Length: 511
Ligand SMILES: [Zn+2]
Image (cartoon, rainbow, N blue to C red; front, side):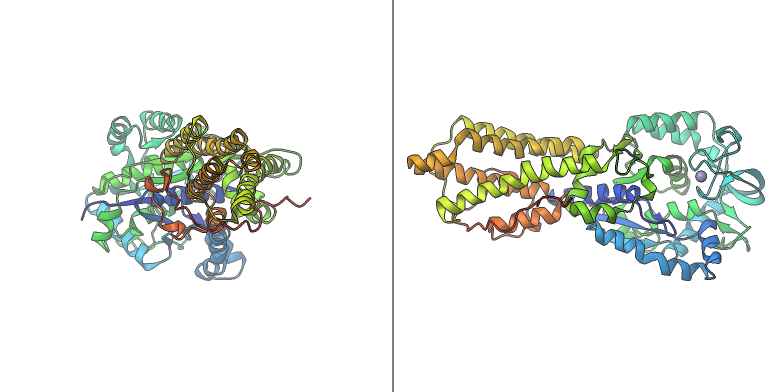
């Protein structure tokens, strides 16, 4: 069996972090991509999970008077709740403390050891416990601070097993050059390439000063460095070493979505480990930018201090999922604010989309008793324009495959705006007054058919809203059975369905 599955991943999250809007950002983007590929007919495998080993987990457990495993079990629900809150459709959830993971990590590392890619040596250097990563002296900020956390680093000196990372520098450079899509966006690839070109040092692959990790099978008292353990989740969860058939259908991963703060681990260490073990590298590592917080209401907060539930409670899950991807270019840093979220809610969602749905269904209700008529009147210029807007939306959404969510949503809103313009151009209320029944039937049909397409196309981003809209249209088939490109074709709506106006999709926000 060869690869037949679109396989995508989020980073696995440090179990003792509190889920914040940064975690949610990566996870929602991955979910939109997973739903988008399913809508296009792909078999999809979407993985997320938790990273449960490492010194900071052990320290947190100790402070609580628990074993590390108890501590992890106790806070795991936080992460599961986040996935529920955000309506994440992951197919698997891996915990790095599971047997299916630990046993495979040992096998993988044993393989590197057996072939001579690990050797024992002493290392002394600055180490950030929060990153669980070593830094070169030159990378530290003034005052010996971690460049990510701006906290003092520790000095670690110990005898460890080292991975011959430097040996794989030429292979990595070949990879970046032969597959420019391997690291995206381009600016990140250039950054990684420059880092590797400047010379790689071998990295420590084990630890001895604490025991919360996967034990090294050939040297008692050593556990694997948490990043080796964590990165391997992408293959252990896919069936590596356990279910070769499943693994061959999924691997290589199509894309690892990550934040740019963990780029080096994913774009340097990870492919080097895989190349060493003779396992194919993933197709792509995509690093999104940082979320910055602006505006009056939340501008004094840090993105890592904002819980997704604070925003979901006020704006609803659909707006939450839509907003971050529409407002910020995924590969770049971007500013989030409460005020701009209000603006998007009111303009894009309540006015452009919610009012449109309400208006169309009101007209079908009052002019045709809620039943969608057959399009009897002739199609003219206005219909031709509507059809172009529909094509723009369909073609534009392909941007999702490049993780250009903002661009895809802009084009999709061309269709939302296009239906609004179409209603204004055709003035169905005037046609009704004139008794131009054939023309009115044409207009009502076109509008409802376009709303059908809008429900399909918005479903990866706003699955709840899309389902409500779909229900209003009274269609027989299920929304989740719709597939592109067929479901985006004009005229897919069967006349005679009974629409239901129901509640408005985006009610006015509470003050
Ligand atoms: Zn750090």
